[in-house]
Image (cartoon, rainbow, N blue to C red):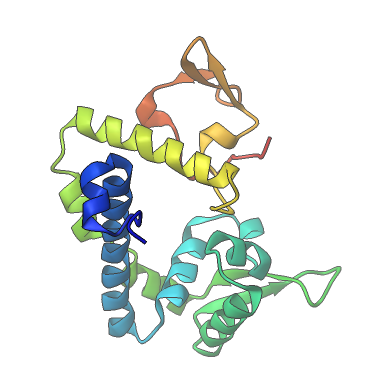
Length: 200
């Protein structure tokens, strides 16, 4: 009990605990900002997240199975959210010609309107991040991208599309290199959500 990350005494003697507690506070910010938008448009946070994801990702990622992995929730949870979005006319189900039970999801015109009203929910956080210097941003991003990759490799984060886990990524003499783009990647060019990502 005394070794808990959330025990202030533990944080005083263990720097990692302090950082993890800090990340937990940042995660609270996302919840608060998302709930504020959710109340404005009469949707739940997961429904907004699904709409925003669909707006910016390829069709092959916009199905119940993948969305469940993406948001670390069960398929029934996603199915329930999709049902509500469908009933509100915010999405379009594109059924497979080979399997009429299988479908991908795209946004309706009304769905696009909701995304334009909600996809800026993280702006207050972005504003604070923008106040850091370029070197601070690069250092923070380097740490975050590695953390996301390690959480995925340890099975805690089920989906990631960062360069480090991609088959096109290569480390050459401490340099990051993309074999798809055929170029060396600067730290700020490492992607967290690459459209061309392919698992190794």
